[in-house]
Image (tube, rainbow, N blue to C red):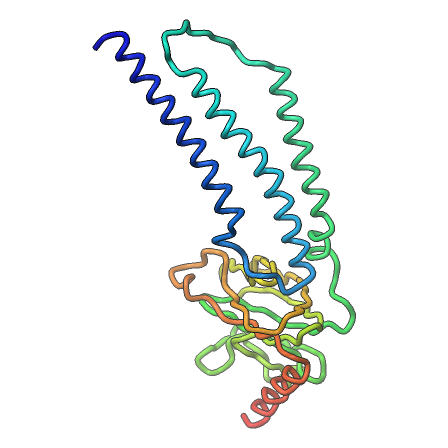
Amino acid sequence: MTRKSEEQGSAAVAVTLATFLVIFTVVTVYLFLAKIWWFPAPITQFGTQIDDQFHRTLVITGIVFVLAQLGLALVIFRSRDHGQQVSFFEGNSTMEFVWTLATIIMFVGLGLYGEHAWAEAHFQGAAPGAIQVEVTGQQFTWNFRYAGPDGKFGATRPELVSASTGNPLGVDPKDPSSKDDVVSPVMYAPVGHEVELLIRTQDVTHSFYVRELRLKQDAVPGMVIHMHFDALDPGQYEIVCAELCGLGHYKMRTFLNVVSQAEFDKWMSDQETALQQQ
């Protein structure tokens, strides 16, 4: 093979790679702008804050991504082999420092922007009068417990856990506070009324996740983790486990039904009636 054909072959590889980077960047930007695969609309004010933070992060990092990929393509194309003498340099410490500092400022700034939403979800308690719902994950199902008219949860005992006999949470029937507790495999919440979640697990780590709430929280063995939300749009929304929890993980799903206050009250009344008939 002649020297000229070798140079042409080397240049062709560089041109191909540079072209691929340009096409890859354009297609990636298009997919994000067209929102072909995108989130469902949020149904809480908290979800709107999360989306704002996501879009802010996406725009900033997207600009960096486009500039970096197009810059790399340009360098590859301009540095393709066409017989020039090879040059070598060890780098630029000043530019490396500036780039690292800029990255730190960007990530710290984004963190500060998202501080309010993070604090609202993790450090601020639910408002007085919020409906408490105990969320319990176990391989491979969810159960939701509501305190009845007395507003108190009854005691639970691990040795009483028996899904086959209708006591999946091990509620102690001897505790007077448990007489009106409602346990359901699906979750109901009244629209516009704050709900406080008490998230726990009976076995391994699970993760309570509802896309429309923009709420995701691990259920950790031995802990009760508090979260809260106020759903603004009625409808049925999927609840899934977002933590790999075993062979049946794929089927660990149920639904959140956001309904009017009247519908919620009727549902609770129906559950109480069913308890009394047992």
